[in-house]
Image (cartoon, rainbow, N blue to C red; front, side, top):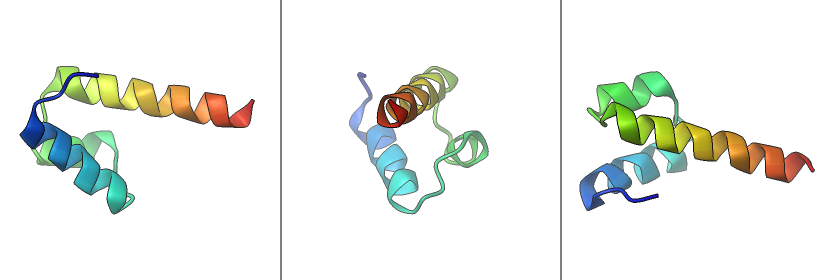
Length: 51
């Protein structure tokens, strides 16, 4: 996943505070393509953990 530094920091902040969701990312002005990547990666990670 290739994110620029600022958007990566915002995602990290939201993840650390357990508020990583679509609405919070939109409020932080993260672009849609990055939101899509982040959410898809979260789903994949959850599926891998459940296996």
